[in-house]
Each structure stands twice: as C-alpha cells, then as structure tokens.
Length: 345
Image (tube, rainbow, N blue to C red; front, side):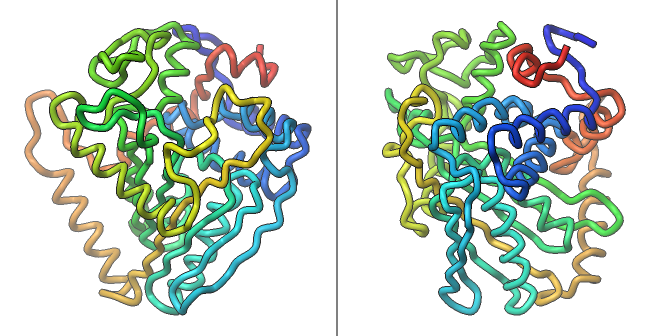
C-alpha cells in the first residue's frame, strides 16, 4: 500500500526483511538482532531517518569490510562505577545495547554507571538504548558524536556532527518518558530521506556549500545547529556536550576527523566511533517506588497543564509512543529506495 510516495509495510514483515538482509550480509546473529531491534524502534516511533532505511548502508559497509560482521566485544572495568567497552568495529547497535546491559549491572550495585564505548560504528537512534534501560527500571542517558555535517553558530563550514542526546526514565505500568533529540535542527539522514521522496526541507534547518540557508535537499551541504540562524549557539553548545562525552572521555574520533559516513564506500578503514552511556538506579536514590510515584505525579501535572486553544500539552515521548501504536496497527512507511533494497512491492 502506497501513500505520499511511500510504501506501508506491516511491522512484522518489515522486521523479517531487515533481519534477512543483515543476515545475508554476514552479520552475526547477535549483532543482526541488535541492529533490527534498534532500527525497528526508530521506524515504529516515526524516526524514519534512523530506521530501516539504513539497512542497505550497513549491509554495504559490512560487505566492504568497514564494519566487522562478527565483533567480539570486550569490557575493561576502570573503577567501581565505570567501564570501557570495545565494540570491535562491529555494528554500533550491538555495542550500545551491551553497554546499557553493563551499565544496569554496575548501577544496580553502585547506584550510577558511566560506560564509554570505543571502536564502534554508527549508533542509529540513541533513544533505542535509553529506552532499553528505562524499560528495566533505570534512568538512562545515551549520546554519540558523528562526522562533521553541522555548521557552528555563525559558521560557514561543517564542524560538529548531529550529535544526539537521548534520555529515558521508567514510568510504572506505562511507556518510558523519552527525550531523543539531535543537536542539529534535523539529522542529515532526514535530508537524504527528503531527497529520496523529492520533498522540500523546512526553513532554517540546512545550508548550501557557502553556508546560505536552503530548503532544497539536493543543494543542502550542511545542517544548521538546533535553534537556527538566531539561537543556534544553543544547539552548537549541546553538540559539544555530546563530543565531550563520546570522543574526549573515550579517546575516540573527533567530529571533524571522522571518515564520512557516506561517499567513502571504497575506504575500508573502521571509523572508531565513540558513544557514552550513563545509567542510574532510582532505587539507590529516592527509592524505586517513590520515584515511580513521583514520575506519575509529575507527568499528570505536566499533561494537565493549560494548553492553547485547539492544542494539547504532551510529555516527551507521548507523540512517539502514539505513532508507534498507529504504525504497529497500520504498517510502517518506507521510502522507495528502501522498498527496492528490501524487495517490498
């Protein structure tokens, strides 16, 4: 079924097609399952730029040798509440889920855990891993830096990556509270999606090669930081926070030094991406039960706040979880290029 140049696919069918392609590309069962889990999270929640459309790219990178098909993840404990995880240049989704698992184990004993990830690859949607911790009762923060594609505030060339910040918190008998945001106005994958769909970009999110704002996805050569032309210093500063955690604390690659994600298919060198995970156990602070009660009270107050006429107040994640329910029932939209690769008709 097609709509607005996109194709609707039942979630179960799409999941199997993505798993099949990753497996055919040689991904180990564990890393393929992790990637499918993260990609389906993004596609269900409407984060299409980081969803199943990335399957083809990952398969191509595994075929060329940049991404290790069968990574052997190792962990180095550095202190009671900290560790470094080596992703062995495999799929970033596998390393990230492993880091959250490790973080929960450490936080369960010490209250809080910081886990740095080195020798990884593209992370996908950071919120997928934050949710994984929250669903187990832990407050979880996940971030990564990426290759340069965002201008600095008043800058005329790429410097930071889109550098997401994702936070999730458990809510008893409900979906987690979830904030998953890029520090750019939009992700570069959103530009690529607009190119595939032939759709104009929103105003104030991208610039051409000279740094001039553009709405033409084919002319977009860089993104603008969150806040756009007037308040972009906020997004640029937050992008630096992601770099501080993901690159400086882990000793991995700085944003301007990354091998670009796209356009370097013949370069087989791993990208040595870094990510960072913080996991907090509420039981070691106010207590799990009181924290859950506080979350329910806070969210009830937030959602009950007065709204403008014809509008409603939502908590972070409300829109995404509602979209996930719609897509689970009605199918997930994919673009024509992704449909071709996954052999969807």
